[in-house]
Image (cartoon, rainbow, N blue to C red):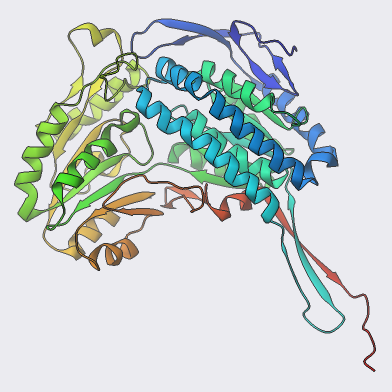
Length: 488
């Protein structure tokens, strides 16, 4: 191990850079060109990180000092702000995000860290005198080593979203970051690990995949897992974690409905619909992938939206004119396009075909143009299953009740949007929707002060808000009976 970084992106374990026996190449999805190499983690690296975090947790200096934790988190926020441009450049190069979308992701990190710095000072438990001479205390103590598994689509925002509350609670942590963003992971490790006053081993980063994640999930020394990713993987994690009865916080897949009522301001709503589809190239758990439109405005929406989607400028992050970058890799382009072809063969009507870019300079990259399909059967896989790409289905409805029923007729329940100029209707509909986040005349407006998470197959627990810290603390009731003071 070494405190000096090299040209190979490595892991940060126990306060030092750590290499692996296996090195792989990082590829720019916009060009297919190699942009660097990285150490690929395996069971050995995962176990070394767990051991380092376990040793660090044994030292009470971190887990009992709220002031220290708050200082460290605030300083970490400063470090992410200072290197924001570097993170944006890396995300564009390695993840394909346009610079505007990269700044959107990176901007979450310092806000999340500062909110959790405040939680470190304020999440302190309760006390009550139940009867005379008896006092009950509820103290909140860190659970131990936290295993954090973050996805490739937003490693900065979603990795820090779990790391910050873990550290605020007094846990130590191992972050399992995806191989697709290894160069970005290395910078995350540098920014986190180099924070002044952060004890060695408290925060560790490894670049890996299912193998390293499985070590965290199955380890008896990791009592809590915070995972963001697919519902299928979330179910596997829950099953494996049950062997040690460990707690699991999950934010999983989504199939976000965007509901346009008859009185929706389409001049405001349709640009939001486009953004909801193309942000992160549709590779976002909250991607607006289902458009539900009142039948009286359907023709206008169909025509206007089709023109807007055809005009989306697809291109590499290096081009300032790009509005949507590439898919993470070509195999995913093929996967998405097969889902679209299957939907068409099953009866979906093509409004905008979009699809893989097959001519011009972009053919070397993993580009996929936005696609819009009209469907009439809500049970179709293209409606029910998460595509994780810029594919939007459109359905019509007649009544408010029908809109709610269509929106709820899915295994997922992560988020939804309601567009209407009515005063009462949006709140009424929001309360009826089976979704953890509902936006009115907007989409994906997230704040660390408010809980984020899913209903149904979209997850367990919450990833923001005051509830975020609950995955990382134990509640301990202490009852004191010091005696009573005689009354004169």
